[in-house]
Every structure is written in structure tokens, then in C-alpha cells.
Length: 187
Length: 187
DNA sequence: TCACCATTAGACCAATCGGTCTAGTCTTTC
DNA sequence: GAAAGACTAGACCGATTGGTCTAATGGTGA
Image (cartoon, rainbow over all chains, first blue to last red; front, side, top):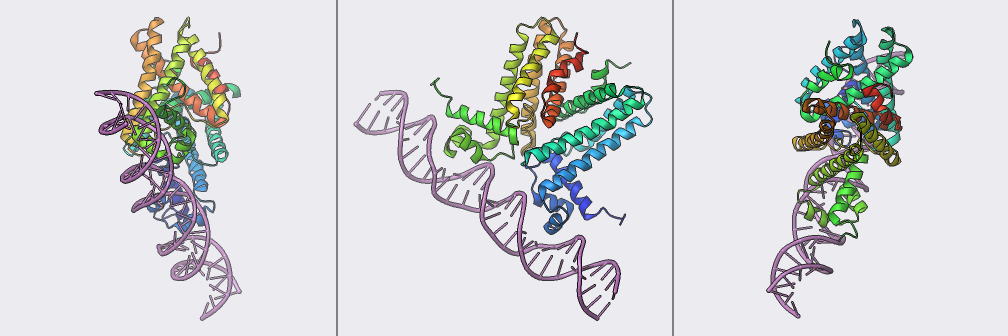
């Protein structure tokens, strides 16, 4: 059971990767199925509503992964800026790994596709989960709840924009420079 | 001749709008053709390489529109922050108009799709054109070339991120707040 | 051993995709 | 007014799309 990822997990992870690379509409079911090594019947067993269903699961999974990185970055951070800096470096590293496969901004990008409102809502919730996770660390480091939320939001905005620019340039510098951009030249 | 937009222009504008709403792969040729009121033959006359060709034209057109708004915002601006603020308000207004049609970040989003490198390059150039346009105003307002470029880049990053967040929330506040976020609470 | 249910397997389907190609219709030029 | 080229018009194409459906398979409890 713990030996190999379950069929469901393999589907979600293959879908996540492909959606990130080619977008929702750009990715065919066959492609996902092949990559996951799973027949079509299994897909519709685990995700009865099909592709859209799978995309939502992929978005959830991605958000959780991001939050995991946030946790790792802040657990030992002495202050907010250190936490953010660590996060940016970790993500820049990830960017460099993914880049060869031409990956997209971590999340929120999958959210083209039909069913506007469902996808939009899913994206909104993912954003909010991530912002809330970061804000929690802001509070733990002494900020007021409002200040922490605001700082987290500012950061996520900067991160999202930086990733986009980094991607068009194929260079992760922009990500590593984000803390300096947001909080002034390095101390 | 100046009475109606040319067939070509109608194609580019319809494509721009649809790509913005549904993305490159999410938009069918038929849809574009119907919207533009143009038969398929004309498309392949004006854009012999087809959809990809049209997408690049749409990206160019969009970048030019953005630069036009930058020009409008900075022409009478007494300083950098005023220019940025005006730009953000203009774009927030545009956002509110488009929102009903569920539009996407202004540009850079069309750049999923095949032909990775061609699309990526196109996006990179569009970004750089826009950053350069903003940087020019920074210099005119007294910044050094490096400072101006950096300020423009920071701004474009923040704008891109803000638009994304604004879109998932369906609220333009985030765009209007960007100057405060970047340059401190309103004076 | 049997029945039962979750899961796997993949053939199959209509619809749509981007793209090609031939015919026809203007407009311009001599 | 005829020839020529720019442009419009849309029927048509093979490939692929997301999705459905039936049959087989595997493990579990009685």
C-alpha cells in the first residue's frame, strides 16, 4: 500500500505536471492516462465527473505542496524576511528543476477551461489557503493579524508576478531577488 | 477604409478577447471566426501560419495597448508614483469592464500552447517592451537608467500578480491598492 | 467455492479540432 | 472591358478531443 502511489495519486500527480506545462485545455486525457499508466476506465471511476474533477484535485494537491514548502521555510525562521527569503530560494530551485520541462507558475494557471465559476472558486480557495498559511507565521513572528494577512498577500502577489516573469525569461534570478524587491536591498 | 476595422483587425481583436477569456487552447478557430464575422479562408490569407500566427499578432496588439495606457498615465504625472497610481486605476477600471466577460491577466497568459519557444519568446518581448516603456518615464522623472529599469520591473511584477489575484476574487481592489503596497501607505 | 463489489481495461462514439483547398467575388490597373 | 491579383467564402479532411459503456479481473467475507 505504501509501496507505490495509488492509481488515484498517480493520476493527480501526472495531471498536475501536465496541466502546469501545457494548461488545462492544452492537455489531453490520453496524455495524462499514458503518463500515469492508467486506463480510461480508472479515471472515470475515481473522478466520475472527469477532467474538471481531476483538475480540482490537482489544484488542491498543488496548494498543499506549496503550503508544505511554506512550513519548511518558516519553521526555523527568526523573522518574516528570513522565512520569505528561504521560500523564494526553495522555489527558485524548484523552478530550475522544472524549467527544463517548461513548467508554469505554480498554480492558478490551470484555471482556464470551461465551467468558469467552479475553476475560479477553486483558484480563490487555493490562494486563500496559501495566504492564510503564510499569515499564520507572520502572526507567530509578532505581527498583528491584519498586518500579517497584508504581508502575506503582498508576498503572494509578488511571488506570482515574479514566477511569471521568471518563466518568460527562463531565469530564476527574479525569484531570488524578490525579497530585496519587497523589503529593500539586502541587509 | 477608416469606416470599419479591416478584416485583419477584426480577427486580431476577436482573437485577443477570446484568448484572454479562455486561453489559447481553450479557444477554437470557429469561435474566433464567428466572433469576427470572417470566413476561414480569410484567416489563412492574412495569417498563413494559422492560429499561432494570429496569437502572436494578438499579443503584439495587446502589448501596444498597454503601452498606450502607460503613456496616458505618465504624460502628465509629476512623479513616478503618480504615474503608477494612474495606471493602476485605469487598469482597474478596465478590469471592471472586462470582468463581466471573465477576462484574464492582460497578457502573458496566451502563452500556453504548442511551439513553446516561439510563444515564450513572444511573451518575453512583450514584457520587455512594456518594462522599457515604463522605464523611459522613470528616467524622464529623474531616475538613473538602472533605477528606472528596476522600478519598472518591480512594478510589472506587482501588477501581474495583482491582476491574477484580482481575477480569482473578481474584485479590482487589489489593483487599486498596488501603489500602497509597493510604495507604502498613501501619503 | 461462491457471490459481491471495487477497480481495471480498452473498444468505441459523436463532436470538434486546426488546417487545406477550390471557387467565386471584388478591386485595381492598363 | 479584360486581365490579374487580393481577398472572401465555406465545403471538406484526418486527427484528436472528452466521455460512455461493456467486459474482465482481483480481492474479500461467508
